[in-house]
Length: 449
Image (cartoon, rainbow, N blue to C red; front, side, top):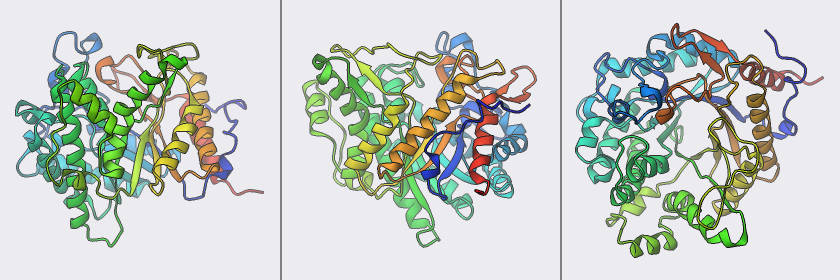
């Protein structure tokens, strides 16, 4: 099967992206690995949450997921076949350090050792995310991210993984989307661990950022390469626009708690005054101790940005949907990615940016045409190129995601993958978007006449 002429149309403006620009694809451990109780792995909060009646659509679990734990060589071949130079994946904390404390589980860490070697043999650079939401359940039982001790446990775990893989892995990301963990997991209860406790959510914000800073500090100190490792974090800074002038305050508050509350302590060493004032009026306080903000603001070598859409809100904060949307009802807003990147570069100059996730689920994803996803990827790559043309130091773009997988509280319904996965046979089939992405990257690598 080959793509047709329309599908082969490349994004416009991409020749302006530098030759060293990274092209990749991303996954997360819990969403694809399966093997939930094998080789010493213990339950994560998502194993527990997915068994709560009504918590996950269809009662789905990730016990098997995409069976990547057993099919890893096949999946590495899929990654390499796309022609990407980078594969971003996460390490499952409860697989590597059962219970979230104590010695390493050799069998669990051996899996990632094999994965890294397989990627390097295939000519693909491994990019590690240390935590993509699958907190060990035993740590949640002890208070989870609402407790300061979890930050120290995370740094211990990070050093265990770094100690084994740092000789072959250059780029290390600590956390993925801490906003989602704090908001969905602790404030709203729609994600694991399913708590509805605003005070716990506020503490979870600070302790995740503290975990990041302590882990980076300790990994950097342990690095045997003089400047040879890259350390960062991945955020999902969702821009919010007012639908009317009356909605300006609501939009600004959404951005204060969704963007500035994370970026400013990381990159400026303090929380925004507007956030502190609002929390104070509500009777909450961030659990900041002396020295915390210095740890949190440890220098970043890269900022990962996960971008899916730009939100528009009414004065009461409710979203407006008056244009194209994905199967999840998310707006399709590629120009918002350019605007976001330009703003990040303006407000926080000197920090290299990589788009660590960008993709979409569409209702016709199982059909061979898959044109909506092709158009989505093309438009967003064009948006990245437009930002680069305006001087933004953006150094990579990773498509989300490799495989149709366990999509958290949505179960297996939404399909973000470049490859479909037959849930009964685990057979992987490339979608038109996978072939388009492959052919686009191939066209970039071809010599110019």
